Length: 207
Image (cartoon, rainbow, N blue to C red; front, side):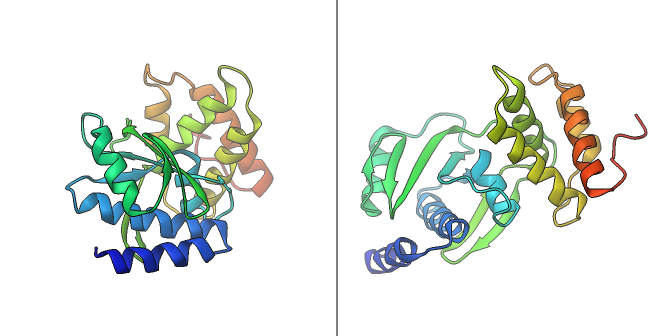
């Protein structure tokens, strides 16, 4: 991507008033710049849930990981972010009026594929929704109850119930039973709560 196009994209992102669309545009631009260097980046955490739910949950920043097995070189991170006139580093920056974190390798247990979203400056890979749900439920309980994570998990479950996205519920159960999480009861409780609020049969009824 040439410098003029990058600067045009940055101007567009800086002027964008819709926070979810702003995240989408910045993720699209960052993904394309890293792809040019052979790195596949993935939007994770609350940022991923914001994109998946079309803003039903607002993250307020942008968090991305990558599919490389090792951390990206610090110099390379700074060089890429310099193209975006970012400030800070080597993992956290301010760019185009947003906070942006580029973390380490993406942690995934789900056997489902990453989600692909088309953005204005290139494709975006988003963390697997089953991973996101189980992870947010865990964060909502440990090390202390955390209401923002609970709200985030409920928003994700709700869009799954409404069929706005497809959630593989047996996969959610499988992940929640893994040693990495061991939080099936907490996942069930949250899903039952959302199902009751929406007056929809919950997918764990057969357990």
